[in-house]
Length: 193
Image 1 (cartoon, rainbow, N blue to C red):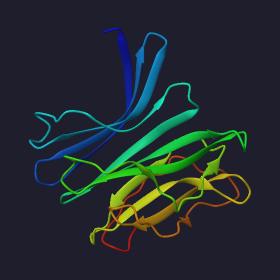
Image 2: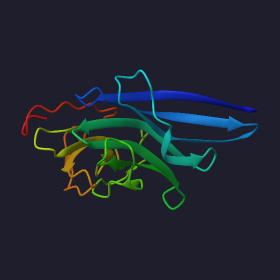
Image 3: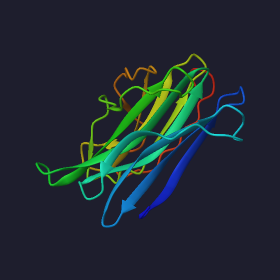
């Protein structure tokens, strides 16, 4: 009662066995205070019924942290969700976008604690509106996200890792000469990204 909300930026992934995973960003208001977060639900019957909502990450509205661009990938029982977490850095006097993640090994019934993908360099001043995730055929997680360049432009970076969040060093895939935003990802086999 007395609450209102806005849901947007949904992403959905089927698991090939009639299951569906969906993630989205939601803002919830009660009077003049609110919060926003990355939300998840799952269906085991092709979307006819849905689980209770799981909040993977949240921030108090007005706290200086934004959460954006959730993306979900599924392979077998593994579910990997990535999103951009953009806190304000008083030291740099700028927002710093960095991808965060939460993962599940039981078809999205439970998730580990949300964490930042530490191998990505935060993009100071970047808008935080871009990341995507996919599994390759061997089960490796592939994440593309906005990150920093030496010249301060937002660039698209790609890193591979495990469902547990252990990632190698990211590789820049966009030119450093201009800002690049809102990446999308498709993976075919184990070597074609």
